[in-house]
Image (cartoon, helix red, strand yellow):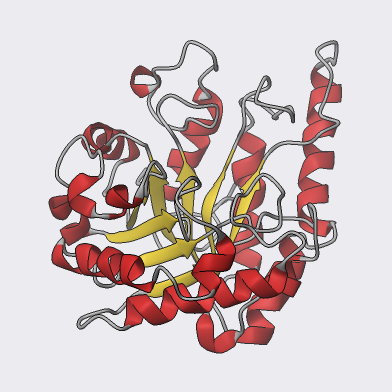
Length: 321
């Protein structure tokens, strides 16, 4: 992990690898120019509108993905199946193995044979279709079918990431762990959000305290950051954060901490303290979304505010000064 500077923050560019999700490949060059260096990981989602979108050639990239993948590691988020196409039980029974082989072939053909594949993330939340709530055994069997099918293809060198949402949410997430022989990396979704986040009438001191309280909860809650660091160590797996970041105050059903640079400072220190197990982190910076980190000119949302202070802190911590 990078050494700490005089302000207690990491210096330089050593330490865990850094990635970004933008949801727009055309934004990568200007984002990296702002960041000061190329990212180590580039992240994208497989669309869920049909099996045809599980082929790279049919995915709606703004620019070709091959040049991006040739210079960076790639993290691919994929559901086991499109929601209107079939069921988890059918996947678990092996009925769609050829679909998953086709997906693997397509990744390999387009230069992503060694991609990190995050399969059915956040499986411990009821919002995650195809997830594990109420059916962890079926989820595990489906996971194994997908991994076996993808590994059938010549040239496959994928890393498979098992990635719950932080916290218990709607189940004990470890009940859905497929086993060490089926998982290469442990991943977490982590956002600076809290159902009881500070109200609008908070003064500055109140805001600071609520942000600190939320951070402590992220670390110490049941199935919090400290738990997952130990879980990864116990299972001999690297820990990564394929989806994390700040969240707009008006985001969805849980308020976010807004433009909160403290979140990234605390996260950097926590990763430094756990540098034996943390491998990489990928800031979720959808250009039209509530988590944007980057130059304000790239943020295209009318609904959510940008986060200029948190963005500057992220760049200072993990980019090139």
